[in-house]
Length: 167
Length: 167
Image 1: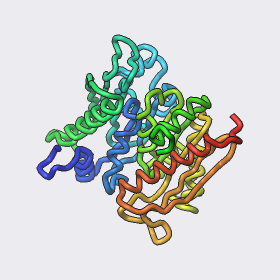
Image 2 (image 1 turned 135 degrees about the horizontal axis):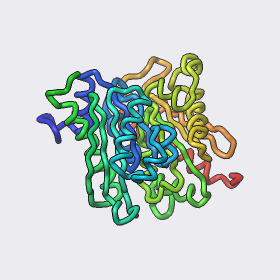
Image 3 (image 1 turned 120 degrees about the horizontal axis):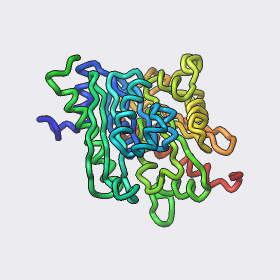
Image 4 (image 1 turned 45 degrees about the vertical axis):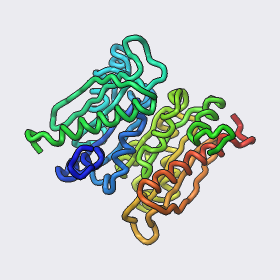
């Protein structure tokens, strides 16, 4: 719960987006549509939610989000670099005010020792700034998806709540 | 439950897709990412799930799914015609074997008398054939999203189960 009224995280974020009159586009890999699903559970989300892209394949990341082959080859699809490119890519594609992205390893199989199950990157372009955080979650595939989606929504909440936000 | 083993609908569909070696792309409007989210809850879904597009705005339907302005103007974004164009559009974009789409009115506000809350169209391109069904669901926004997502997954299940499927 993130407010006195026991609102859900997606309700708080939606209220802030509507209040500020800002639009959002989301690019998801490991969360597989969960971030978009939570946001569109909120009444009136069509006011701010322009589009969500579930770029599960690397081809989709390249075609839809303009993530370069080179970036994926050099850093892997689960990396801060690719998360940032996804956030920028979806923001540009949708012509949205804010771009939010998630990429990670939901499991049950990890990619390798350096990319274990639960490794997640969340990135956001807001107000001209890029932000990216690395997380290490534990639990089931569905549990990791939920933690990752909440981390993305919370990054958005904090970004929208900043007093310095120059909207 | 759709099998003797009490598998969920998304588990049955995933098993069939893997067994047949077919790939899927999903375009969602009113379900807002729920279909993609359910499918990617299943382990190994990256084998068949290429991408999901949550085309909430009409601009996203045009840009990402190649749905024409004329079609949206003539029939409205909630129509059999647009559902079919979304299914074709996402299949082509992702170069997937199957394209599945959902468009509808999740509410709580309807579009007009002819497009009330709960009106949903599900379309699928599979095996060279186009299928489209109209549904009228009742309930809350979240309830209608769930009914619509299940209807889409069930259309896919039936399509994959057909003995005549020429894979």
